[in-house]
Length: 183
Image 1 (cartoon, rainbow, N blue to C red):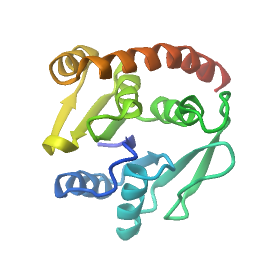
Image 2 (image 1 turned 60 degrees about the vertical axis):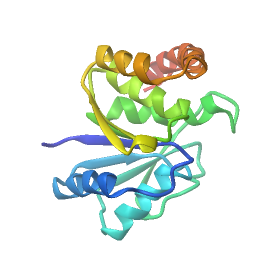
Image 3 (image 1 turned 90 degrees about the vertical axis):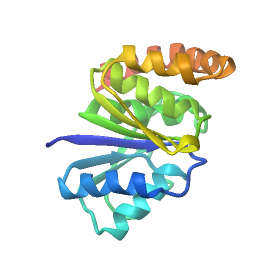
Image 4 (image 1 turned 120 degrees about the vertical axis):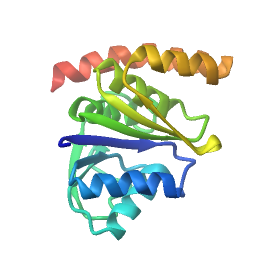
């Protein structure tokens, strides 16, 4: 297996389970290119793990010119956000760029983060496979299609979570179109 994997997840997740580190070890063993964000939480925890493995095949994506976390001193991809600094849309610009670049995704979810769910949707809309770790149940799910993803959401997401996802998703679809045109 070759390619680029987009690793992302919830800011509330700061510890990696053995199931997650096994997946990361597989990525390292296969020398896959990793694209990852600069947020605290899952991004920072994965960065710390990859640093502990002395893994170099990593690029950190940041919205604007200032990275919040780059623990391995890896190369940086600056994504110019069109949204106001500090907003969800500002940080989503780098997620959109990583989803475009990746061949598949590894997403770590706390059971609440809308951003992580949107990243899964972004990847699946582009017909890219996603390994999705649900921290509360300590379980991985594998998604290969939007149909599988929608079945999962119908069975596992609460009404208010689905409403927030749909609301943010509609806004970000317009932003994703603008990003594709800029790239």
